[in-house]
Length: 86
Image (cartoon, rainbow, N blue to C red; front, side, top):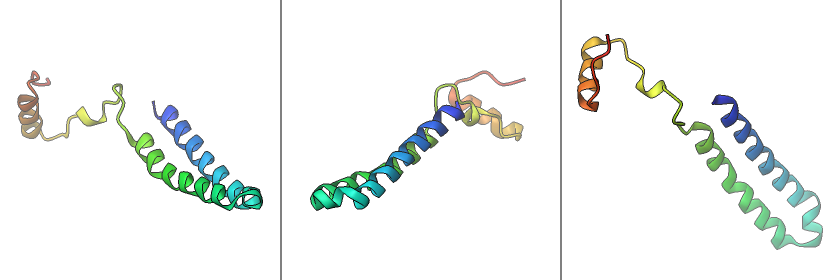
């Protein structure tokens, strides 16, 4: 689960770097507006990559793990409509 998210993050960030570097390395020689547009797209990618890397998948159980405080865990289980853990 983490490897998939990490791979997606690095692919998106790699794409961001490729867009930015290629925009000002050689695309600007043909079209400055196209280079600016590529930079705008590259600017949007890092926040999206962070969201993708940090989203919780259905197989992730870290949110549901017990905290270690029995009274708190009992309260949360009751609130969520689950049976108490033994």
